[in-house]
Length: 369
Image (tube, rainbow, N blue to C red):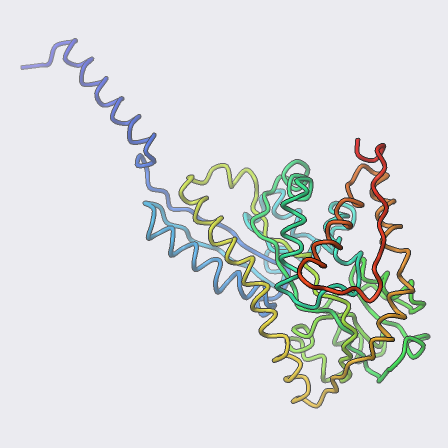
């Protein structure tokens, strides 16, 4: 017997209600999700290594264990998908879904996000650097909101580096020994050289070995992981501990449109793993720092520290720069004074003692608008 019209309506209503219930409970459809994850930095770079050995695998595993979905990462590092200075745009445009990059390459787009560089001679602890940065981001919503509002991406994690020192082709003991030499850096840390009267050269890590080997420049402001990974100790055997500070100015971001399409339970897993990834960038770098110094020595390099007086002299040469940067950015409506003051205070909360305590005046009311 064929069903009546009323019977058909009842069946249709029941099916529709069941489908709606399944959709509301997140059971309507299991998705096979592909995420393109990349960085312009090489896979051997500590934070990129954690992207490919921890972040990706853990997200994949936990999504499979806890949800009806699956996640597969398609990865590309060392410029395979995006170059170091183009990763923000790669995430913004959706060329990649998740990108890890240094905000040092975005002085126009993200001028305040290198705030720890504006306070040289900060903590050399990668763990504490990450804690300081996280406190600032949590207290100043602008820091993460600007990425979403202007660059169509959501920040998943901050990434801490280990401490910056000076790797050179020559031995040096005082600031005067650096005069007349060309020293490379990236972005704002060139100001550490400029204000100290040292000639700075804009460069990137991939150019360092050849440039120091051929004499294009004679040194690089760098953390020891790069010296080890790229074998700079072969051409620049002097690694001098000046303790410029561990800087948290890398980030792991996801395309905002892609994020909005992900199921909520997958988003929750990604956020959980990203939080652990953020902490690991600090702990892994901190654990590896002394091992890297020992490795440089074992390869015939010279590792030594300069006296505190040298650090103090260098810091004095930079005394006015943090306020200068704060005022410049405040004038553009960017809350630099607030961020730098917080960073100074948060560093002191975790026990850091500045060789010179920078003073940042309160941001003017006109700049707050």
